[in-house]
Amino acid sequence: MYNLYLKFHQTLTKKDKVLILFMMLLIFVSSCLEVLGIGIILPYLAILLDPQKVLTLPFMSDIYSTLEDGGLVDGITHFLIFSTFLVIAFYWLKNVFFIFSLRYQVKFNYTLYTRMSSDLLHYYLNESYLQHINRNTSDVIRNVNQQTLDLIQGFLFPILILATEILIVLLLLTFLISLNPIASLYVFILIGLCVTGIFYYSRKKLQQSGEVVASNRSMSNKAVLQSLGSFKTTKMLGKEDFFVNSFNNAIQKMSTANQYLELTQSLPRFFLETSIVTVMMSLAMILLYQGQPADELILVLSVFGLAGIRLLPSMNRILSSLNSIKYMQGVLKDVMDDIVSATNMNNTIQINENPRTNEFVFESLTLENINFNYVPNTPVLKNISLTIERNKSIGFVGHSGSGKSTLIDIMLGLLSQDTGNIVINSRDIDEVLSEWQRSVGYIPQDIYLIDDTIKANIAFGVKEDYIDYNQVMTVLEISQLDELICSLPNGIDTVIGERGVKLSGGQRQRIGIARALYHNPQILVMDEATAALDNATEKAFMSAINNLKGKKTLIMIAHRLSTVKDCDVVYKVEKRGMIRKINKKFEINL
Image 1: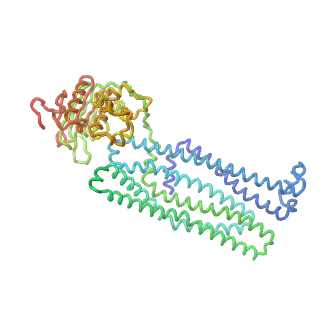
Image 2: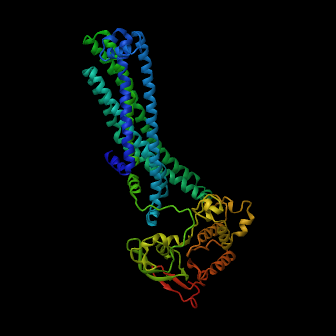
């Protein structure tokens, strides 16, 4: 529990800590008002039972004399009426303050949740590509959407409730001890033993339940993502039940774990209620046995009864909060380090919604003895050295699995080489990585399209107010999509569905090409960019691309030599992780 608190503390900024201190002050004032609300009932009941006690009770007689001398009350009856209105006003003001305090706490908590969720997504998006491919998407979705919310609702909320209720209990104890020390200690020791026993019994099982929920929440997300992501295959193979059963299995385990939490949150109330009634009744018997006068007995039991009514929800909230915190130890076990790292990350990326500028001018890219392994002692690339100069066209061909795409990922700075150097404009790639990546138009093998308009997909990540309509139309023509746009009722404002499901494979590929060209990049990288195009469309597209020769730096990956035959230089990537320059005059087939 303490380790979780320490990690949570590391996620807080200086401003957060100041706001929490202010919140703790509100909690302290609220607790004092809560106990004061119970404390004023004792003298009020005393004068209600015997109005003449106004003249004998400490402080009460002084207050009465002051009010009578000031002409605010005329006699004991008027003072009693005045006291009634005063008590009512106090409770109204007290509860208004409670509402203000609660609103402040809720606002702070969900502001913190918003920031943590955004920071965590920002952290994941700034990881290296190798870290990204080693993460499970369902885990990321779980962490960003749910685990951060659990941190607030299941950990921070309970800590604040715990602080509030413990303070109220301690202040109540202090007040009741001043009234009757022995009876107070008797009540609190018995109730304290009950609370400790309940928590001790359930704490281990709660943490285990939290771990079950965290792992199976990820499994349920995975089942949904995989079934919907392979919808056609699922239908054709009749595997709907497989994914439904996987999802149901994970949900059932989560439900069982959550049932235990619900029970441990609800059952203590019944035990506490029974314990408090038992303690109060036995206290009455003890006081009667001690010969307590009847009128004093009624007052003491009234105050203790009122305190007991207030203690019951307090003790129940204390137990529920402790249970929730213990449960969250299991739920948050695997995500807290990421949240801490996200909060402490210094290299934040400024979101630029305007078209990119051309301050960076590409001159050359040099690879010097590049080696790379995904798995130790299994080289994917071996001693790769080459230079790509500005406005030249370079082609890479090779069989599937030869390492062509990996080589491109290293050039783009998406993967880091194991050994060797990458030099851009005579500078190490790490020094100019951001400028380098933003000068590249990248067309991957698998184009990801968002569930939005054609226009939004081409100007990917640019707000609508900043989209250059003329540039959109220009790149649509280059990518052979102008006829499709003219045939659509809504033109470039046509919504294409999730992953472009409303388009053909070739159309999706061409939108990816248009996206890469939209930002007018200095370097155009095409990783099997024409693989999904028919021969006629590929020929027309490559003709448009060849028109860019001498104007842009072109880097192409292909299976067929015919696709890259017009490049200035063509390399073949061998399966043993090496490359060699191809003599295009003599080598036609791979």
